[in-house]
Length: 311
Image (cartoon, rainbow, N blue to C red; front, top):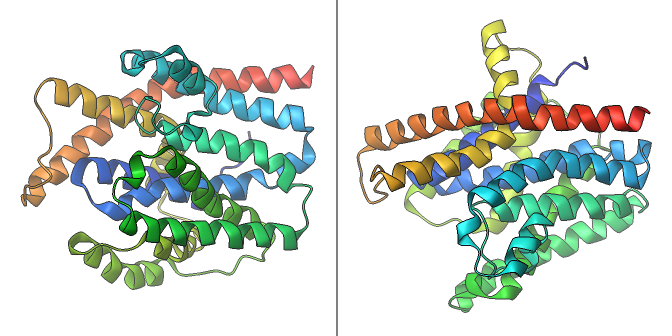
């Protein structure tokens, strides 16, 4: 059994906690847990695509992403208003059609799949070509920031899905390029001290998304420098790190169930304790879903894929 990276599992755990935080407490920087996942994917997928055939690589990525996405599609089947919406979601390409209905958070899974396809081409590109793509996608990110202010309702337009995909691709490219750069050890404590004023500021004031790539990369590199924790904490980090995909999907289900029974968080409430309690309950129930998903869906699918390609 391969040894798991403590730093990567820690950054995965922080990313999914951030996503659950934004959806339970409305703490906006938590939303960039998704972008942190894109950096992780770019970093981790840079090498495997070079050691596998394109078909093998994409098949393994499909096996990793599709089963749980298909389950979510079925659980939220009542959201779809047409067969095309249902099919585009099952094929993980619905981010290209923003007005399509889908399950919550599906845009990021769709982006992961499209990034995986493009990763095959990235492996054949020179470093300078990838840097040019990074510059282009960052430019789109900044332009999208400006357009969001200038054009009311931009998020509801189909073009926004494409802009979101391209600007999010910047994070995937950053992760890809970081794989080739010698890792400089950065103190996580120092990074957190530097980022904490920004986190506090973001509670009260808007921060443009184009600022976040720098913050996300600094945090990611700091997490990579982690080599040890107390044994029990390491066990928790690895446990959560393996199940982040299930937690990500499961927290939407938990919030939906709580909403159905009239239990939901009032974002306008200033009661910090109630917000924190709501986050904890949603996270723990999501972790329960993630354990079931990992044991009976994700792990068996990956084992099947591994056995299939060994034959």
